[in-house]
Image (cartoon, rainbow, N blue to C red; front, side, top):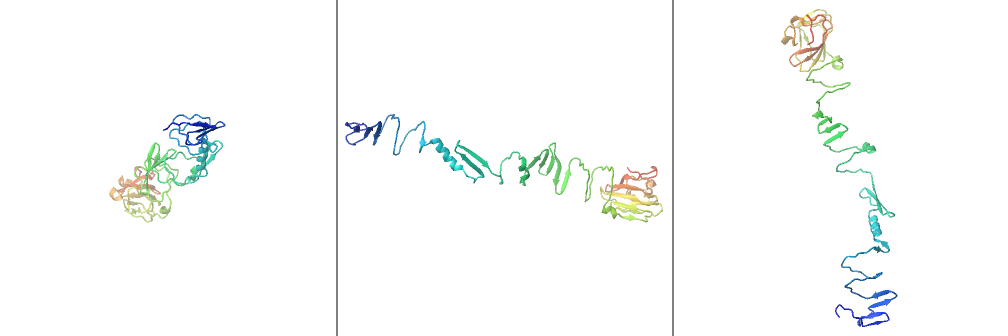
Length: 310
């Protein structure tokens, strides 16, 4: 017999091989079989299998249903049930069974993020309280990079280091209020100057300045008065420190003439007894660390015999 099917008889629309009874039954357009092994093609209008099917090759079908539901709809419903109401990742997913689509809703981002962020606009800007550690930050045309703050055309205009702000260009301000010392290394031009404050209020005064008398340098301003008598040999009490400023005010009506040597008078550019502070003289001096220099004031109606700013 081998693999050959031998039909001994057909009885009442039933095929038998002589061993197995009712191997194949034909009835009302339906072929019922207890077991058939085909080596060729089975061509049938419909196929109803009540048990398991073991297909060793490729199964190709125009349409497959699972419990009466199409395979595509079954897959969509399975995926939809997996992601719907899943908020563990901060993203809410809703499945629309009508068109088999997934709707993703991203909640409020209040956690740490990494990577490159795009432009933050609108109300989100005011809610940013910390940016962490940045290497470079550009806001409009202002660039902050390490210890430098600058402009796109001048990136290191301002440098911050060890409590010192260094401006590489010009500082243009409407007003300036300095509570400490001011160190100016270059030339200073004063258009209009008002000196006031506790240092001036407590400035030292010499009421009875004598010949060879000294002008005090311990404050920003000093009043001197020879009490009605002209004096000579006047000098500064010290050379001061480089950049130190001193306002000298001759409050009396007498002439006060400096000593005729720079080293003694500690005044640069003196001209013997021509260097005289006339009555009511007010002059602004600045020290270079060795001698005092008259830089403003001291208007002299007699230039050939009076002190003149250089």
